[in-house]
Amino acid sequence: MASVVKLSYHHKLFLLLLSFAWIMLICFAVFQYYREKECKSDMLNAQLQAFNRHQLQPIEQEQDTTYILNRHEMPFEGLRATIIDFSGRVLYDDTLSPDSLDNHQNRSEILQAMKHGSGYNISRHSSSDGRLYFYSATKGKNVIFRSAIPYSDSLNELLKADWAFLWTIFIFSIIMSFMAYIATRRIGKTIERLSLFAAKVENGDRFDEYEPFPNDELGAISNHIVKLYARKRQLTNDLNHELKTPVASIQICLETLLSNIELSVEKRKELLERCCANTDRLSRLLADVSLITRMEDGKHFIDSENVIVDNILCEIASELNDLPDDQKMTLHLDLPEPIIIQGNNALLVSIFKNLTENALSYSGGKNIYISLLSHNNGKYHIRFEDDGCGVDEDKLPHLFERFYRVDKGRSRQRGGTGLGLSIVKHAILFHGGTIGVSNRPEGGLRFDFSLSEKILNKQKSI
Image (cartoon, rainbow, N blue to C red):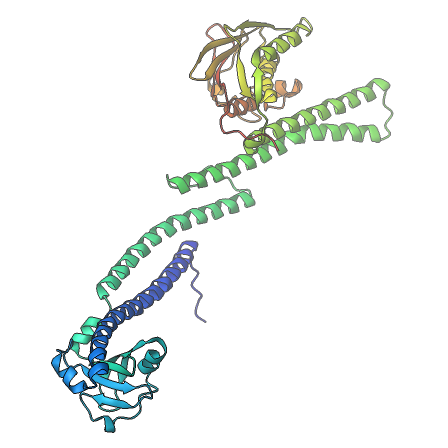
């Protein structure tokens, strides 16, 4: 048995479009051919109708057909003239004897003339001489005058369709088919790559080395889809990894408590506190993941309002003052003017609180400095610094990655989710800004970021 040829998506799409296009072309060409022929027939009939009406006037007045017909020059060579009464009987024919002709009542041009006043037949063989004629009949007061032109080379030339136009349409269709091939090839390759990528995602394969899409609008959309899937899968994998530790810890504690082993009150309390701490960590982890997902997928459905950032910073300063002396850091503000942003209050709070918690947890410093560097072109340029230990230069580019930790053991001990700085970056991007990080020459981390005064093209939450 012969093997079945499997067509690619590109070829299937191309053949489908090509078939549809050529069917439309053939239908249009056939329609145009007969339409043009009909139009030329109407023009020829109009000329003959004018000749017929000119002949009817003296015929009906003088009742001398031979005299009238001989006095006027025929408009076409070989034209045949016939006079018929309303019953279909031939009264006169300039070629044959009327007595030799049968009744013409059922001729199509005669029926049209009797009903509408005029009629024509593009081509019909004459029963009297066997020749092919173009007939045109006009109804008068008492008789019908019919003129007939025998088909000749000149008449065929006059009535034939304009093949130049049809050839133009044909060549244009060839060009369009070629362009359709190129377009469908690009679309087909993109769809095939997307299908391959989806298969890789479904199978859990890595996609880092996946071939990029073309640098065009369709490729940009496809690349965006690929990156979106990549981020979602990466987030799922990372979240799965992060959930294992607290879930395993909770499971061990609960199994120990349920095993009926004699435990002291202090040990039971320690296990319950560990369960509580890991449950709190899970809650914060899921809340942070939900926030990031919301910013990525629901940007157009997040509320925006006028937010006074100074109030947020004052609240953070108050919270810092309430901390124990061994954990406390002093907040220093340098704001030459109020910072007022039309944005989302919760996200703006998360920016400064996460930066502050990052400094509290990992910097080891005693001071936090927040300053407004400039305000121009509708953007506030802000600097957030601490006087702590800083971070190794090779680790700075990774600080905004999800679940990235400079010191994994220390981060988990402090209950961090590893998403704080990632949330900061997403919230700043949401507010039309950018962020960068560097080490201070004096020691500590420095975050330079911008925030737009207004978020354009936003929709209220539904």
